Image (cartoon, rainbow, N blue to C red; front, side):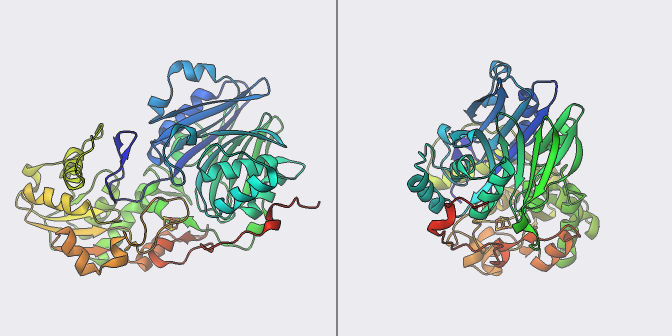
Length: 482
Ligand code: SF4
């Protein structure tokens, strides 16, 4: 992974898969919703830091404010005050399709045969190019962004159907890939999840209304009571008549394919999915790593913050004490353009500070959540050695990533994925660690599977839940005959 500069900011993700986006949708009966949407977006900031936006409805008209950067940079108090109205959706973006620029920020506002619609999208539509072509030629749609989300927006706002749910179901037949959506019409807030449930989405209850959000941590911050996760293919409409839900018939009989990286890395540790706290799931992953790859060591450390829970689990299972050996600088600012290698070194050095008093002379188990390209791990290993570590036993929670993601996670091309091109001994050599152990696919999937259904593990196995080479027929956008 090349060192990533986003709006002059280093990517927070280093050599990790990068998150997609966070979405919220709020319907309240009495109060304005924009400031609550901003609270939800702050909680989902880890899912995207490139741009943020909120749309509300007042006097039957949708208004949108978007800005680049973190939520705190995209809005000031005046912006929020101007966004009046009891219905709101919000979005925080990391670009998976389309570059990071202002016009690609969401929510996107479009108009069409069905009136006005604002769209916040988390995921990736793999047939967006075909959709876009058809929307341009068949519907005469004019595209202003380079995002797949705009194809979704135009499709929905022009889709046939008597109700928004009908139109969304019609569009679900045409969209291939991952989409959790927060939609805003002049009359309703709508949450929708793709038929495989690849991206998360949950529903919560407010004292005077309803809220949908990518993760339960957002519900907690908004002081909403968790109700449930949306089912794959479910559309939930929140309006003045209450909450109505329907499930797309094409979703029935298909098993869920939630992205397993949500559990390994993306979701905040205080979020709950399938009734399980992500922090505890990651502790269990660390414990499984300890069973699969024991080490003779004095201390267990995690690469903060994303690997801390797993490191605690490794320590618990192995009996090797856990220690904080690396401090993460949370406020790394702008990095100016530098030669690539030097930039990466300095990036690691800017981001982490090792504590020699803790590490000196110690044999370390170092737990990381994933290795994608393997470009930054050697610098972290080197940093720990310079701080006096006697041995470094690297343990990784994600199995070797051998296949790219087409479903909304920015990872790398196959050529760039280190595990697609090197053996584990070769990767160990590249990292400079003394030993290297990855969690097995079987070990990981045995831990996460539950009664709620399955997971996508395609980046480890190559078994994609949807065909990744797709053709869309010209008839695909023909109106559905009732
Ligand atoms: S391929 Fe990997 S990153 Fe992409 S959705 Fe599947 S599990 Fe998640």
